[in-house]
Amino acid sequence: MRNKIAFLIMIIFTIFLTGCWDTTEPQRMYYINAVGVDFNDNQYEVYLQIINFADLAKSEQPNPDIVPTEVGYAKGKTIEEAIFKLYRSIDQKIFWGHMRYLIFSVRAMENERSIPVIDTFIRFRDTRYQIWIYSTENSINDVLLATPILKNSLASSKLSNPINPTKQESFIEPINLRDIAIGLNEPSHEISIPFVDFNKEWETAEGQTEATTFAGISILSKDGFKGIIKGSAARGNQWMHNYTNQAEVTFKLDTNERDYITVTLDKLKVKVKPIVTGQQIRFEAEIKLRAKVNGFKGAVTTKELRDKIVTEVKKEIKETYEEGLKLDVDIYRLSEHLYRSNVKAWKKYEANGKIPLTKDSLSKIDIHVDKIYLGNKTFEETIEE
Image 1 (cartoon, rainbow, N blue to C red):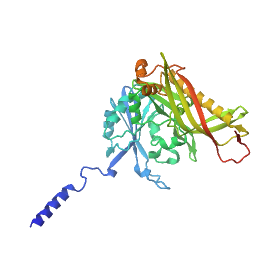
Image 2 (image 1 turned 30 degrees about the horizontal axis):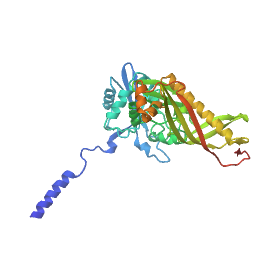
Image 3 (image 1 turned 180 degrees about the vertical axis):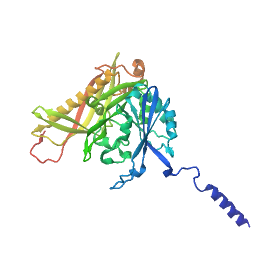
Image 4 (image 1 turned 60 degrees about the vertical axis):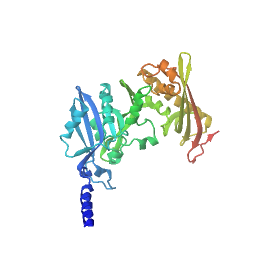
């Protein structure tokens, strides 16, 4: 009798413990991949990019009938109101845990709407700190609907996963929500966000296509939007942080002014040293890197290459630094270096969280080309020591 009662109790508890009654099945949810935010006529304009996971695991012969993404759009006095309006037209529950990036229009940033939106997603329990942040002057809708090269899955696009493409060319450092939170709360309370544009130089048999590209940096401070540094004017930023995996410089040699040579630079190690002398604060940058030379014509010496590399990298660092000064931006976060090494001096000289900078504040840039490597040597051209 006792065994029967124990068996019945076990059966009853088993019934109540099995299953996840409050869990929604995966096929009954929509998955947010990206959110775009614009601001117009005193209202938020919100775009939700819903990704089709049937497209994510496609085979070598993808199904042309699969719709890779749809973008929903709504307006609201707050971003939350706009999102709740979108909920009304969505057939299934929205899952936010796979959200990969958030893109702002420059107009939204100029209207000081980016900080409240970022704060919303940081506080929202379903999102993660690894959400990438971008800005653009293009239509948000066009960016979210842009098809990756070879019609690849949107989940592996440049904006969804910026780490892979930046391993080969580190022009712009990707920034996520965690970086934003740290950068805006520590000196100089400014942070650079990748600026996205379209590259229209790709074509298929069906005609011209557009691919998203990193075309510069937008600078955001705790007090609002500071401006954009575009194109070659932003190149110096890649030489002033250790994130850079690989980048290039192209120049003419003095011995052959007709032909250009491109040198690949990697293994960057950057050290910034603040120097406080009386009322003056200066910063000295020491950069160590390695060079790889693949294609060139004629006889070249390592001294010629080193001198040209140093000249070009210095020029790009100074150009970007001066572009930052025009926007009243501490583009290389020099204030943070002083804060880390000499907080007493930082407290004495800081104004609104950063050290006042001039063109001469970055007083010294030492660049050391540790090694120069050659690719596979086929022709007679050589590099002489």
